[in-house]
Image 1 (tube, rainbow, N blue to C red):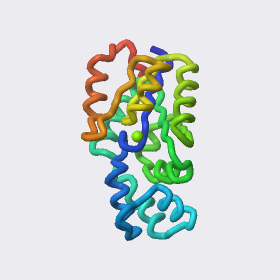
Image 2: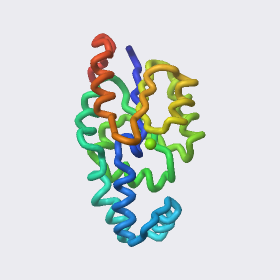
Image 3: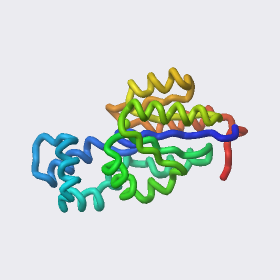
Image 4: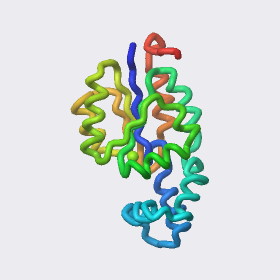
Length: 179
Ligand SMILES: [Mg+2]
C-alpha cells in the first residue's frame, strides 16, 4: 500500500524511561524524582542533568529496537510521536542520533490531547496506519479514529520487538514499500 505511516511513541515504547529516570534521580541526588523537578533543573541548565542526557540517553533504548526499526522502516514512512515537555523530548531525541535518523518525521505534541489530534491529522493524510504505543488510554482513542493496526506495547515487559516480528509475518509482501 502506498503511503503507509508507522507511528511510534517514544517513552516506554522505544526507550526504557523508568530506568532512565532512576539514572537521573541518582545523578541529581534525589530519591523521589518528579517531572517538574527535572524540568526545573533543565531550565537552570544543571550540568549534571545536561551531561547525563547527552552521554546516557541512548543507553536506555530497549535492546534490539534499533535493528527492528531498520526492518520495519521498509514498510513505510516512519513517524515519531512523542508527547511531553518539548525541550526535554527534543534533547532526548537529538541525543539518540542513531534512533533519530530512522525517522522521517518527528512530532512533539505537548499533551495527550494534542497527541491524539496529531494522530487524527496523520490518518486524514490517507494511507495505511500502523501504531505502537504503551499508553492504553491513547490507544483506545487512536482506535476510535483508526481501528486497525494499533498495537499496545506492554508496560510490564517491553514486547515491541515481538510485536514487530508478528506484524512482519502477517503483512502481505505486496504491501512492502522498498525505499
Ligand atoms: Mg509511552
